[in-house]
Amino acid sequence: QVQLVDSGGGLVQAGDSLTLSCTASGRTFTIYKMGWFRQAPGKEREFVAAVRWSGGTTYYADSVKGRFTISRDNAKNTMYLHMRGLKPEDTAVYYCGASDHGLTTEYSSEYEYWGQGTQVTVST
Image (cartoon, rainbow, N blue to C red):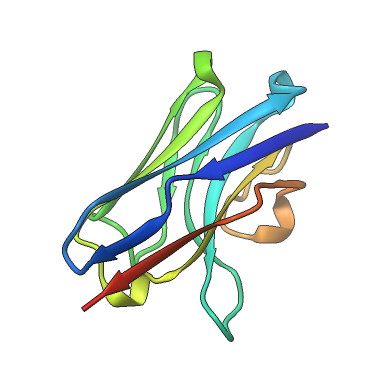
């Protein structure tokens, strides 16, 4: 089992920056990939970014390319999402996920473990 705790959300203004963190514990040596998803009210959970734990290959949704950067610190078992140029449409609950398998990264069904979510609200 892997436990995830995500944090760092808050209320910011459009154009601001924010960094989310997700720390894993438990059987972290089994982690193959980790990712960030977000869910706005009334919408389905959508892919934001992902990283392969070994090697560090990154993947991004088109809507965040060039504005968000995903990174990880293997020694701390922590993944980050650095967000800049935030827009009101980025407002959502952000969830981190982890998986011990799977070649694809953009489907939430591919992730077995989830954090509790952290709210990001971007005002105009």
